[in-house]
Image (cartoon, rainbow, N blue to C red):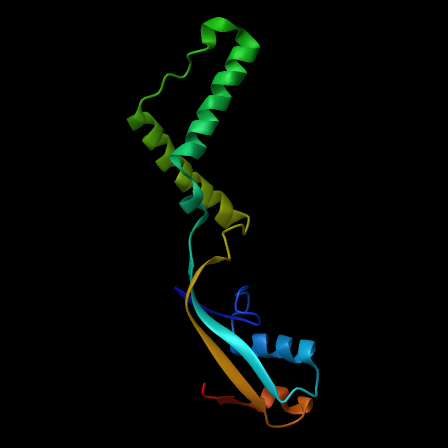
Length: 141
């Protein structure tokens, strides 16, 4: 689980409350007296979590169709794989997909969000002091 922040309670894309608060500031302008952001616990899964037996079966089906298209009817039943062989292929693909996603920076940055908390900030000073904690968190009513 990773704590992340949002400006709308739906899209948790900020790593810090300061980043989310700056975005809210830029959207709402200098005249807003209260700013709201959201904090949530995001469960980010590896790319391999999205590999299913259906995904693996689609690969095997594609191999079968390509063999049939290229070589005719006698290749129609190839590969005739068992459930254990499909599970083995799925496990191997998961390792390969995670290595590929790691190498190319393609691991997911999204996930299921739980324990969403609304945080309200009341403006204390002008924008020049933004990075000097010019906002005070206030409690929910």
